[in-house]
Image (cartoon, rainbow, N blue to C red; front, side, top):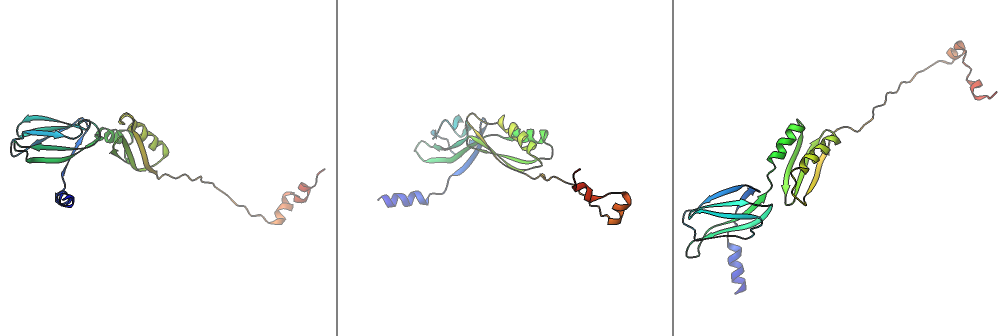
Length: 182
């Protein structure tokens, strides 16, 4: 009987994903009235019933949880995987203002921000990290994957001069005397 239960679970279609930014909400409208609503992890997301067919889901902190709504008979009306991410639109806007023409992208992870792309020099990367620190949640980390594409080469200019030996005599230079002391 355990294998039958496993087969039933495996044959269920995957849940729809509902993406929400932290401190933002999304409304769901159902075709039938819901008698019960559940959120698996209330630390990640919260649910507010506005009417029997209208529900609001709020992102609280980054993470993933499950939402479910059932009718009076216990039949599932809606089941979603709720993914809460950090809203980085402000960081992206600040990067564009502080570093015009930058090619740095910011993405969110649970408890962190990932910076990727290219920068012209190390100072640009440092500035981007400082800006990202302002958007980091408590205990979070910044993962820096920005490539510095600027040149770290030193340019040296060298000139060669060619002289004939008889010019040394004309100018009065005796190279043998330079080696003799006294």
